[in-house]
Image 1 (cartoon, one colour):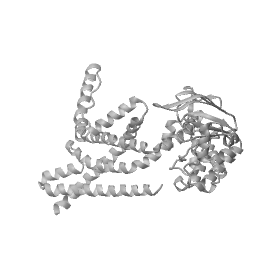
Image 2 (cartoon, rainbow over the protein chains, first blue to last red):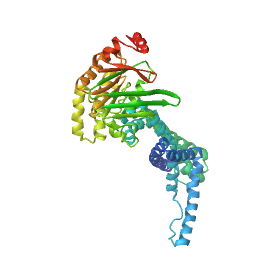
Image 3 (cartoon, rainbow over the protein chains, first blue to last red):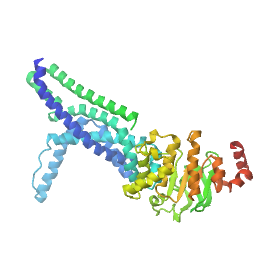
Image 4 (cartoon, rainbow over the protein chains, first blue to last red):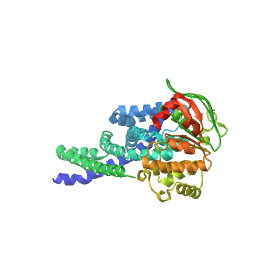
Length: 231
Length: 240
């Protein structure tokens, strides 16, 4: 029992990191997702193609693999390009590695963005066709109609699934432990390495995840109910 | 005001409009009647290019709508439209529904847009509902807000697509009353409707459509009392 209490401050710091990276990933993911979702809805084939490639790749491959590509694969390529530039044109060599935090943010937000793109696409498509027609009949351009009429309504419908995405991402950030990002699970692993009490610590880690996910799913439920009853 | 030449519209293999010709004068109120599936709604939607014609041309206020070089957003500002299902913006109050286009499209000052919207809501008898969201309005009230919203752009033509068809019977009157006022003020109107009373009382001309063609047109008097076309006779016998 004392181990549980002793390890708690360290684990809670890890949980703080988990929340931080999740919030950052989902925030950037919303921007990426809005862009990706609008690409998927575009009339132009080129944009649809880009959007589809993005969504398919990041939803169709494991987040763990994406993390490894960003943290180990990307720097390798960047170093190779840099070496080439240094040799050919005498560019200075400044880049060595992607910091763990940056790699974590990039991989998680790219992944989250793909799921959020689908959330936005579905939300926009769920808006009655008559809304766009009414807006256009008043002389609005397609972009104006999107901005003032369609998207504000779509955002409302997107809030509950966005909340679920946040919860899913919170759990998925545990994968960042493999590159040594010191979020909740990684902190737990480090304590297990010292104390050899895997059962207690990992159960404690699981419990902390559970408290966070339950808290957020309650929040999502509450928002959902409020949205249903009116504006 | 509106000139339509040999208008065709097909959806894949289905030919909905098969050559419509018609001319509508300023301040004229034209009522389009016909059985469902006759193409009257499609015809109306071709007038502001919500439906893109597959053949023929539409000229509104001297602007060729069907010319690809025409700025369609610009000319749509002059053509108000009222829909069967209202299509109010549910995230905006009644007043905001009316001010949105003047603010964003006409780039009016908020004060000016607000004043115009308040006037129009008063005109349709809904001053007290300005700050209410559409979800809290009755069908008839929604449709009157929708009319005010269209009028806020100061259009030269108003298109009505079965404006009373999704209303409870007791609310039809209030919407028709607003439309009658508009007609009296000299608005050019094209109205697709099943309200034969309205057609008779307010219409300057009635078009009878079936199977994508205008089969007969004339004054309400002629259409309702001396129909010549057999299908028009059949149609009238069923609804009158």
